[in-house]
Amino acid sequence: MISTVDFRNGVRLMVEGEPFYIVEFQHVKPGKGGAFVRTKLKSYLSGNVLDRTFRSGERFDEPDLEEREMQFLYATGEAFTFMDTESYEQLTFEKSQLGENADLLKENMVVKILVYEHRPIDVELPNFIELRVVDADPGVRGDTASGGNKPAIVETGATIKVPLYLEVGTMIKIDTRTRSYVERVR
Image (tube, rainbow, N blue to C red; front, side, top):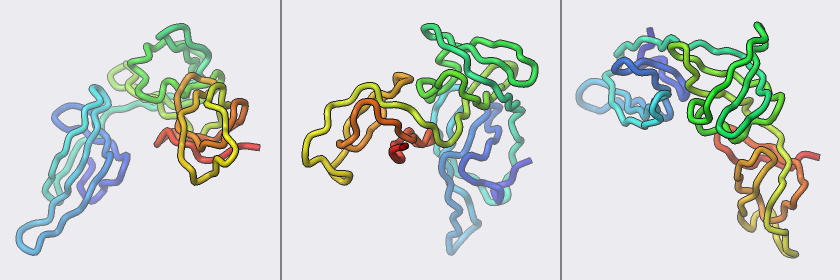
């Protein structure tokens, strides 16, 4: 059981029979009345974000989610094939089943697949990944680190905002939680 005291960003809980995770939370202790917790919850199944308020001390069930470590092998169209690192079983998932970070998957990358009721609902990538920029507008003399951002396409096909000075062929580090540029990799 999860209590409102245990709320942190990323904590998983069941609300109305559906698995959610906490995107944002705030404990509120008004001068008058009981304490409560304001939360933003995101559904693993539908992707909907709910704003909910819970009384302090309320309890919730933990969702029955299984984490399986799998290696991404290849993608063909909308189908992504993974291999379980323990049983060597190969499974194919649709892009829609893998969540919003499916376009950051690189061949041979080891990821955690969240499985709910025998079907995948989310892919947890490592927090930081390194990818090569394959397409971007050319850098212009005078572009600086603080000058702004431009869209760049990385080797997996994802579009990431990068500083203006970055050029095609540069290896960059990306934070997969925010899908943002972190630094250049030498």
